[in-house]
Structure formats: structure tokens, C-alpha cells
Amino acid sequence: MAAITYIEYNGEAHTVEVEEGMSLMEGATLNMIPGIEGMCGGICSCATCHCFIQLEDQAAMPAIAEGEEAMLEGVSERRAESRLSCQVPVTEAMDGLRIRLPEHQE
Image (cartoon, rainbow, N blue to C red; front, side):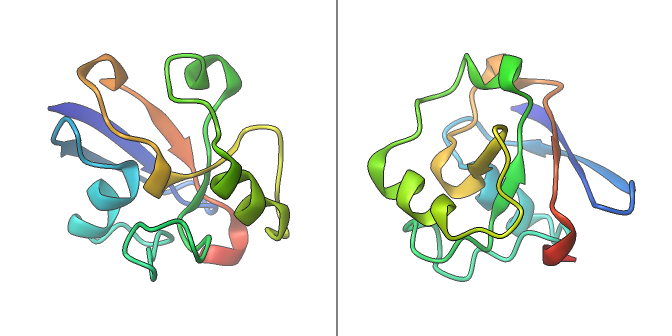
């Protein structure tokens, strides 16, 4: 398990335990975190799980695949630290990870 903190655009933080192997999106939706919908169920086809992960934290995560990159191209608030949380599997090394959520997903 890893303690992941999801921070809404308004600054409200929600820390939850997420099982290793689940995606960041699954951890958020199972814990009813506002701002992550995951409408496609995690198949990388909707971008309703867009989040911001600091670049130094992304070094320990899988690289952005072509499908994720294509979905992120259509995101209005895209930044260098943008990821789709459905494409990031949780590992124990992520314990303490803090991710931020964009304004348009509130």
C-alpha cells in the first residue's frame, strides 16, 4: 500500500491508501476523490483523470505512451507535469506521493 495525496484545485487534500498495482485513477475513484472521474474506466480514452505529478516524481514512473500523449494533446490545462492517472500504476515507492488536480475537473 502507498499513501497517495490528491490535492484539489482549491487546495483541499485527500490522503488515501492505494493498493500496489492499482492505477492512481482507481485509487481516486474507489475513494471518491473529487476531481477524478475516470469516465472511460481506465482505458485511456477520455482524459477525465488528468492530474499533475511533479517532474521529479515522474522519473520513477512509466514513460508516457503514445496513447496517453495523444489524449493529453487535447487537454486544455496541459503542463509539463500532466499525466493521465489511469496510466500510472501505484508502487510502494510512491508512498507519500502528492498529485494535484486541474481546475476544470472540480
